[in-house]
Image 1 (cartoon, one colour):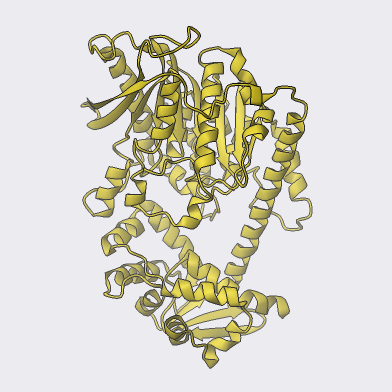
Image 2 (spheres, one colour; image 1 turned 180 degrees about the vertical axis):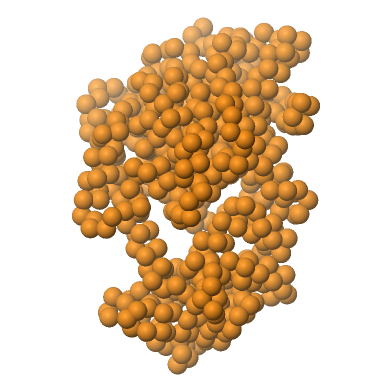
Length: 565
């Protein structure tokens, strides 16, 4: 009984209200066998939100919450979410949005104990259109039945499974960090006497903007090129034209401003950098979509994104022969690619990872919930016609994938096909592309010996994105999801990108020491500690995972052995 009352307290109430801001009508009803049914009136919540008063109905729950939990709950109840009804409608009627609503509906039931899918969607849209706006209390008022029945047993299961998963994740991360520290202890390199790759290089550079049009696919591709100036280097050791070429692919609902800091840094080291926008999944497209002026992003983006970069390279090769500002400046024998999130998938596909349609077919049609939010996007690829798409580009010799999504759409069958050097970058607090499932375990599938896993403690899915990105104008990201100050992450990526590309694209072995665990230890800054691993086998990963779960008596849909965790 004590455990039950603890869960029934405001801690759980706050959890599910935060996760799903529309839950009921006049009363919230909780049925928890064998103890029976409990309920709470919306009036009590509204009174508490407006004046901070705890009435008799609410006191049963409030007495089991801490003052901090009560303060957090009241802040949440008072918060107004500034979204338009059009945006809410577009998102909740999209294929991914409908999947989310369906899963929420299993937890939040109507008065007749039916899935709350339609009621939740209706209350979200009505509340957003109301003069009071989208608030928790207003959502409750708009729910189209007198009572919402909370599937409390399912809620406890979700809380318990999520707690276990987070614990396992933290134990895996800690184990990998411990291994990296042990390896770093054997290093004899004094990095304080080495050039600091976090600082800008010696090249001046110029920015050139282009707008390319692939008429065969009706794709308009804005591109910014950061071009080192020939003759601006101060020593003979630095590269001279033609410069190695790096392409950067942004994530979903982002644009070419996301990695300006990285493009400028690489250009200062003598790399030509081309940063393009993918028109079907960039910030501009999402602005139109949320305004009701365009449809949902098409599953064909899984094909079009790699083809965008192929077309970009084709056009740059053509322009390099005719455009005076580019002529003789670009080396197409030394091409690298960097991508983040959906862009991470993009560069992995360009490196030779084929879409794994059999895996998508087996896993995406199951009625199965997952804490891996990226699977909602990855399963969109299951709607593509099944064929052997030629997405690999042999011009690309090395790639860096930051927070990539890949476990299902590419899987082991896809990633094992990559035969070029790869660096995967993971953030331990990434909830959109969870590190264990989307970077750490996939790292074991890579077959090339020149592979690296850069793990950043406390980094989120947004930690690598430049602060000037217009993504924040499309879908505001709560500060809690941004994580700690991102400046250290920028410095890590600047340094590691230079080291990786110099080593594996330009074949300069003197930079290889910067890819060792000891360098990560040297530049790490709390609370965003950096670790680098150069090897991790599937057996080693399984031993770590099984070790972290050995005390669990529950079977588990959280095991990483299935591709669809």
